[in-house]
Length: 250
Image (cartoon, rainbow, N blue to C red):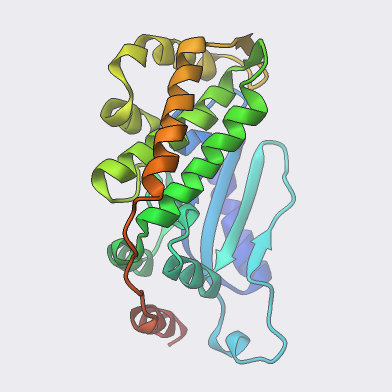
């Protein structure tokens, strides 16, 4: 599949007249709990020729390919990515910390070194808390639930705990989050679910696990309370990001 992905990235560069600066896996494969039938979620950052940014009629700032078989691939223009970075977009931090990298440039490595300056504890917590609440309330309230949905609630909860404990973007790998932040009493149950998730189809259903549900409820309430106690964060300027953007246009 890696060769298929590389071919698609080459095709995008040729058809769109862009240069791909970073391409990574995002989603369950990068998180470390893919099912046998999980999709490949490829995300990338690209830059266009300088003249394209000087036109009055601008190009779209995303490139999206139709989902084909189990390959889902799309990317953001560098302009869009840097604007989102200034606003501490958590998704962008995840892309740059993915353990599965398909393509990387010297610029991507440089930007990775700058990104910590733009991380916002408040924005990171709000993002992951919203994700945890949505998955917990929408998918884990019935007598039987999809096994995979536990990880789509657990991972953001553990990410919130990581941010509160460390003040940095959380790691992508679920195993790292679990080791650092999960209540040890839940390890046997979560490991059982992890084994099931990695060896069963995406649609596998199981009875609700009450101990994990109680943990999710308690964690969500705790994070909601602690967000309100966070201090105001400093202003983050544009200068360094402007310089990085211009360096790629030259």
